[in-house]
Amino acid sequence: MGEGRMRGEGHGRRGGGRMFEHGALRWVLLSLIADKPAHGYELIKAIEARMGGAYTPSPGVIYPSLTLLEDMGALSAVAEGGKKRYAITDEGRRLLVENAEALAHAERKMKALRGRADRPARIAQAIEAFRAATHERLTQEPSLSEAQVEAIADLIEAVAEKVRQA
Image (cartoon, rainbow, N blue to C red; front, side, top):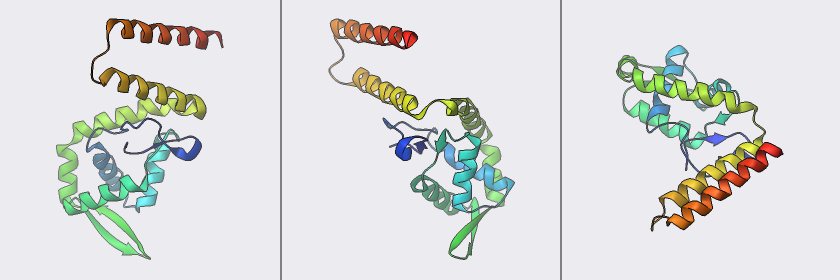
């Protein structure tokens, strides 16, 4: 399961896959909180806005990441009306500096994917399903035979031509 959801019907990200590299979401969250203390829901909306609606992280990813950052001493949390408002600590600032390269990489990926927000949801879902199916087939055991490689390549080329003509 990925670290978030693609926008579209049901908001489900089809075919799995990760939006962020392992651990990168925590640096994005820490960066946002360094700019302004926030509740988890505000952070979800901030990431969604940064992505132009192309990606919405799920609460099931955000809240465990916030808890981890809190456990690491990077965040402090204050309860406000049943919600927690997170603020960065000195340790969090140190970790941001230490992980600046990972944060920059995540921000570049977010910027690149933001441009995909204008894809119709149905097409984005179909592309993701195709990508996942292809990856799954290429990584299955036993390896593909030469005949299977040719058959799959022929299918892909035929579909590409149909897309050009659509």
